Amino acid sequence: MKYFPAWLPFALGSAFFASLTAIFGKFGVSGINSNVATLIRTVIILVVTAGIITMRSEWQKPDAIPLNSWWYLIWSGVATGLSWLCYYRALQIGPVTRVAPIDKLSVAFAILLSVVFVGEKLSWPVAVGGALIVSGSIVIAVF
Image 1 (cartoon, rainbow, N blue to C red):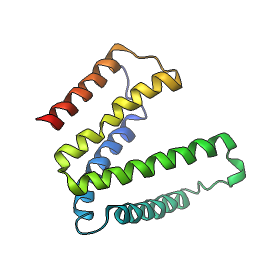
Image 2: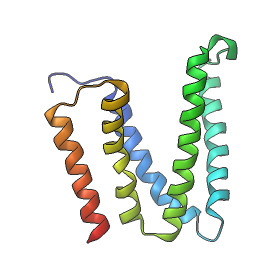
Image 3: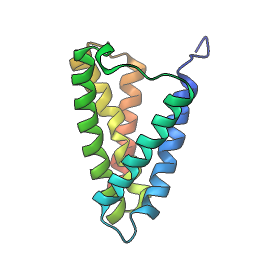
Image 4: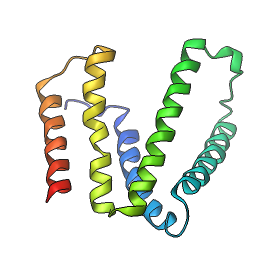
C-alpha cells in the first residue's frame, strides 16, 4: 500500500465497534426477546446518529435527497434490520466465538454482490482474501 487511504480509519473503527456489538449484544439479549433487544438497539442508534448530525450541523431537507437514494436507503435499512434480527437471535442461542465470524461472511457476500451488481472488478488479492474469509468461517463453524 503506497499511501494511507482516508477510509481506512473508519473501516478499522467499524470493525472494532462491530466486535463490541457482539460482546455487548451477547450480554444484552440475555433474558429478553432478541427482537425487543434489536428494537432497543435501533432506537439507541437513531438517538446517537441524530445527536452527531445535530452537533455537526449536517441535517438536510428530505426533498434535497434524490429519490433514487431514498429507495436504496430504504432497502438498505430493511436489509440491516433483517441482519440485526438474525444476528441477535444467533447471539442469544449461540457462542460469540462462532456467531461473529460466521456473520463476517457478509464480507465475502459483499465481494460477490459488488462484482455481480456494482460492476467492480475482482482482483486476485480480493478473491484470495474473500476465499480465506470463507475458509476461516467454515473452520470455525464446523470444528
